[in-house]
Image (cartoon, one colour):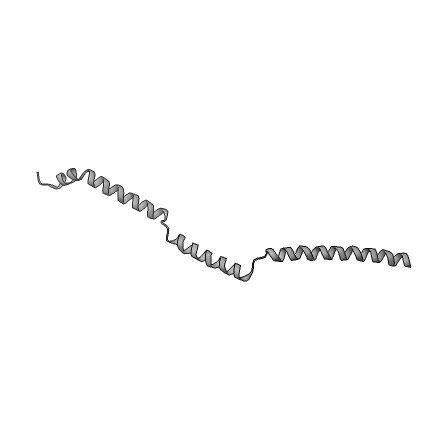
Length: 89
């Protein structure tokens, strides 16, 4: 009977040691977890970034600007030929 009790006591000591190490690990994890304030500030930063990126030029907008600039350069470069075409001969 005493041998069984000694075995149980040894097993209980191992269980206690495991629980202690788990508590230490949980305490470390808790230190690294983000708080409500951290999560809230991340949400605010994300909203600001989304607002800024929606104001950036899109591919379609850049393509349109390049097309218009090319047309203006072509008109300026060939303005004499264009006006000559519409003048009475």
